[in-house]
Image (cartoon, rainbow, N blue to C red):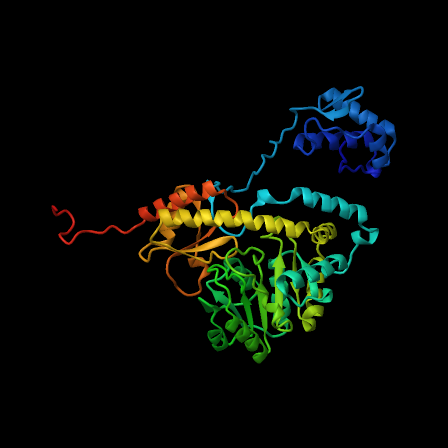
Length: 472
């Protein structure tokens, strides 16, 4: 039964005629769709503040005209086929991008592996246990229950110095960066350094907030801190546990140098710990924040561990910055959704989150191995890097390969890959980033074959010393 946006003007009189015209116009315009059940005469009369006889008269007139139907036990409904407006088509006005057969673009975990049963149980428990106050406007920094669980979890798993008072619950790392951009700009920090190559999404976000990021080269030890010191920046955004996109780990001496740099320039390091939960061939590396908790903001989210659609993350903020960051969060959205916070706190408390991550590490490792082995067979001239952890690998293409042409050739074969050129602030060799989380081992092997075909199709044509057209 529909609620109706209809009004009558008592000063104009003839209320039944007004109501009849309003309902007729609603049906003609398509606002009242065919088959929709209208309120009973008693309910609509009460809603409009008119006598029931007014509504009875209007309904009877429209039934006589064929706009409505009325049957005992079924109520009054809009007749089918009388609207003069074309019904809106699903997706009308939206440009749909054709789906590729194998999408190896990085950034998304295996969404089919989302722990629906555990999340449903945690949500039910959260609803059962939630106090009425949980559903009101709470602390914009997040619910105390989740902040306490996160502080314990990050201290245990990432060696973070994370008192609950320094944890702020956010809607993903992107929101953390947006809030930090506002806070840091107000403090006078105008020069911000990023890894080169680095995340194109982060670059776009920072530029949208008025920053012109300075690129600092990444080598086998991570960000070159000596060149960072020469950049004039006072803020640096880094991915030390698994650099995006190259996959290198920030070396111990670079970690110490980065903390020293931040203190020397009275600056700040923004640590994006985006997929540190997944490691395969190396010992776990503690977060950078644990080394310099007063100079590092630790950022994390559930986007890679569970699903980006949850829009749930956290920031561990230096004590001197907590108040400003918290207020920026307040003015952004008044706080993150309470029920999802309680559900995630339940996953942490029960150990379900740890169990999920442990299971996914084994699954992702098998998929990584399948892709690496297939690439070695189908594309032996390319070098694979950054495979010890994470959900993607970095593929150096042959030096004579045209990166953009390879991406286009892949798309023509139904294969989605990510070019590295948009991630660079300075030119570099041709390379691709391939995500393997969302595909089976068999499909990854098939995708590697298509990639090999695409690279071969883009190989430059060579001629013999005799010249084109000369007999051999």
